Amino acid sequence: MIELILDPLKYDFMIRSLVTAFASGAMLSILGPFAINRNMGFMADAIAHATLPIIAVGVFLGFSISELGVPAAILIAIFLGLIIKNTNIGEDTAIGIIFSSFFALGFVLISLLEVTINLEDLLFGQILAVSTSDVYIVISLLLIVLLVVIVYFKQLLFYSFDPIGAEVKGLNTTFLNYLFLILLSIAIVGSLQTVGVILVLSMLIIPAAAAKLVTDTFVTSIKVSIFFGVISSITGLYLSYFLNLPSGPSMSLVATGIFVLSFIFNKVSKKGSLATVTIS
Image (cartoon, rainbow, N blue to C red; front, side, top):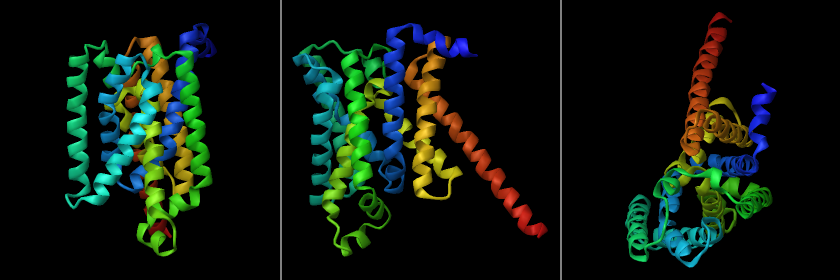
């Protein structure tokens, strides 16, 4: 067993990949419970897809996804927030427009600029190709997300559960909304090379959803979500190494397996509690 764990560590690319998987899994899972609580899954998916045109331009100019993707995603998140706030077309509609139009623009730019982008890697991730600089960037992004969440935790928690009450209490809800959008953007772009545009939503939502099934408090759900996210990322990477599977989909499927087990545990524990109450 120990040999199986240590065998991939003989290769530098696997060490870089494992560190990146850990950081990405933790970073997305920190924000997952907030995203679920605010029903922002579609928003996260839109941010991931909307970065494609700027990634295309970045690659054309010689930048990596991590280097240009973060400021691009922040701008897109702010733009999304402004569109939603200043129009009456509805949040889902605004997100859908940005989602589809930016994604289409990305493919057009890839064709016009004739940039070399492996679309399969972009859509599903290619963690084995991360460079040392990419590792440092992802770790830095994790630390930024963790620090900001710790500093603004009470405000974000209050706003997440009761935005109207938070505004009545005098909190700057506009600032908190954009702050969370920016954090979400940072986490998503920082994880694109790990799981890709298509699967980044699964790693944001699934560990958090699984954690919600097996915990009773929001704070505990964040801790369990991080644990599930890291386990999913690391286990999925090991499976891809030993079974020659694509890394991003492997991570997503492990997370799905954890969710199924959590669902079963939730149902069994509820039946056990009901039986106890009936006997009593």
